[in-house]
Image (tube, rainbow, N blue to C red; front, side, top):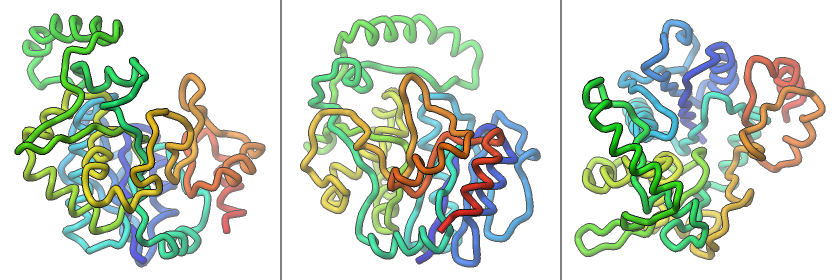
Length: 301
């Protein structure tokens, strides 16, 4: 079992370095995309099988560039080796177990695509439906003048979105094929075959990509929609027995809590909660979680 870990980050270089060192070994590689707005020199370090993305983009919260960054990482990983499993993490995610334990887990579940989703096209939740029934503009353009000219459009769309007025089709049609839209959490763990399918789809469907550029947030919708409109849906944990309710069951292999915003885990008292979650990874941790991180590493199976 060879794993490619893909990490999208924009802050806390020391924590990212710690995570990368823990996950990489003779078989497993770590590929890191550092937001192009950040000084990458603060992140760079020499460690076996850790690679930094050659094609960096400027990431903005809720923007399409997060999808581009992920695709760039996947392609770079594919140039190096055919990995068995591709695991997407964010810059404040951390493994709860040893590399050996994680590898054994994926060997045991070698055919499962860990990417849970729910249907946005048919959701009864008005707020969720506006993620695709309205236009969203989070990525900034290179031209300051174009950003200024686009502002009135952004403002009008934002007002309509908040009033949950649907003014856009909540599905996509191409070559007489209707794609219903699905959403889930950003982190996923996919097989080699599934990831190759996604990259090929990305390269061949530019109009499809353009549709999701103005959804919210694309990294929680784009990959899920491709998978759930393909044969790979039958290899996901849920299959097609989905409901339209968004809840904690959408967690894949990364545990987090989101009451109003994502909670930061810092205390050793949180350890049992994280371990009992049944997940392999946890977020949100950072450099301020040092004592908890040390405890996790010391007790990792």
